[in-house]
Image (tube, rainbow, N blue to C red; front, side):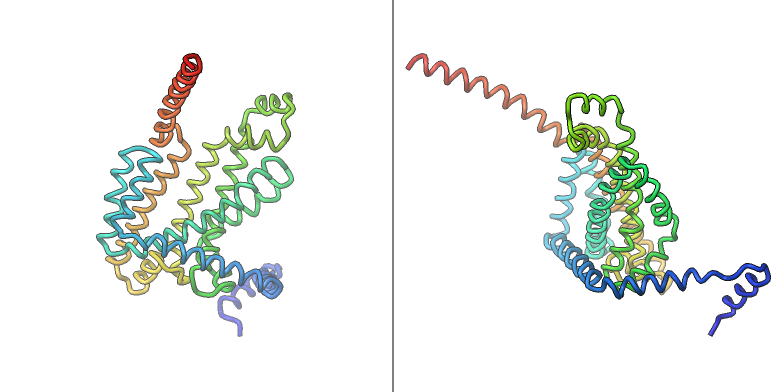
Length: 323
């Protein structure tokens, strides 16, 4: 039975002498065919997503909240400096204080799994797009579709594929967060100075040697900016995952919307903000490793090792002479 909206649409297209295209119907048929043909693959992906995300959430929830806060602060200190470590403590303690720590860890696990999968696909695809103009032109409209499609729409096919649960939220998050990783990687490789690449060719380097020895190291900062964007988009999309039962803070937000619970919704939203600030600062620090505490400690240790090695050599030489 046709709804009034569909009848109105038919009247409008008929009145304008434009036939109605059954785009949605054909896409649904293609989706059903894909599900029938690759049901085993879909089931395998569902099990993999569910196992990894739940396992990671259990690992994160194992230590006490204060212990994990200290671990997060230590990571921030090593990746950046003591200021970021000091900022991490109140960010995490706020989540604990509103009694949403376990939900926040579930969201973090979802974001981590989705980000890793998205980057495993995005970075090689970005490199391939930078190397091949044909690939670049082919993936560009697909990336445009993935980025411009409203985020909630991606929940519909993932829900039909996996049903309610975290796998549906993870797949929707991957689709939504993947494009910046491809675009930034392609841009980073293309921006590498062509003279440096030509010098590599002149010295007889192979394509793989140039890629891993010249292009990727020089493109690291721009690629890490893409990684940062992937993580931020994954975190924002993970909240929408609550509408398909993905768990975590998304469930709190969707529950607050259903019951118009302002207090619950704002607290869950602020917890997302706290994690977003932390993840943004840490991933931004990965693109500037020279400024990190860990890098400075390693640089300080190398001169000491170089100094002790000559001293040991001199002592060995003196002992041979006296012997």
